Image (cartoon, rainbow, N blue to C red; front, side, top):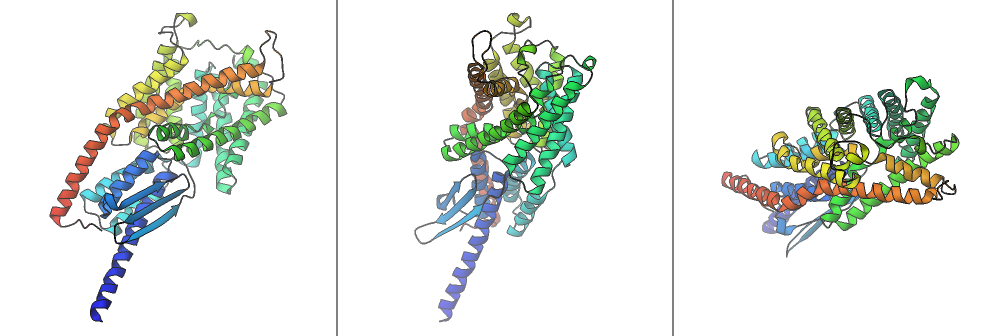
Length: 461
């Protein structure tokens, strides 16, 4: 009888300990999913955390979706499964970086479960690096940087920034109130566009490009991280998660387009693209400055560590200047290779991503923390707006006989190709170097676990 009671107590204690370890593993994955890490990174970090927790990889089964995590631990004698619901999503690059460091630190320093749980809770509950107002100002100037790249002067840069700051602050208030996220996007896009339209009534002598702010005032909404993660997931064969990310991205873009279109119709804003020159006329240093501003502004939205702002600014400069050099040329009276915007965008993203493969070891952060904010300034906002205005005015016949709908389709295809090339350019170095990087990290992990066993600190379950 005593032996049976002892066995029962032992089994119960084993189950409780396993339950706690799986719970910690799921909570770790939850922070990563909610911070919008790509699925491959989530899987790698959860497996490394499981190794720290003493859960053998051959007994571990992880399923990741956009709204749910599942972990199963099983062998020939038992099977234990636990689910974790994902409550919301918001880009948080600092949390992604800190979770990665925690998983390594826990193994190296022999963290107890209590220590690991305490550190994990600190990461989850940590305040963002920037206040809501600072984030709104950063987002506003990021959109102003976009506006300069679209050809505006610096007074119009200020107009676009003010409109975007108001729109971003309104979006934050909508999120704080618990309003549906897509509705918040539509409302903020509508208000930002209205404010940008109102600036066209200011004295004409103040700016030579009064309509440009309408092109950039709502670009703080562009879901660059979900879009790049979608491409990453599809290339890494996480098809289901990738499709969900793509659908979420499309709904966000649809909500943004609805808000802008409603403002355009309400204010009877005519198609102003014929009056806007698409030939770049700024100096390279102006484009570089605008790219740096946009990259730092989006970094604040993505909650990147303050120490990395200057790094991302340089990345943005490299990406945009490379894009412009490859894109522009004699046909536009510029210096460059004249190879087109699609090839130029791919080249800029690829260069930044290649540099980031090495830079991650200098700054000790994941690759996407450096690359995504750097390539965001290359988003083809002008083409996206051309597509939107073409759809709104699809029944209008142009003098040249080409319907706006055909122009919209052309602009939509080009903008889609550019965004795809940016995403692929960011992903390619990781795809080709992932096997080498993974083998190197697995070797390091095996050595650390071996050292833990020798210290008597490692117990497998």
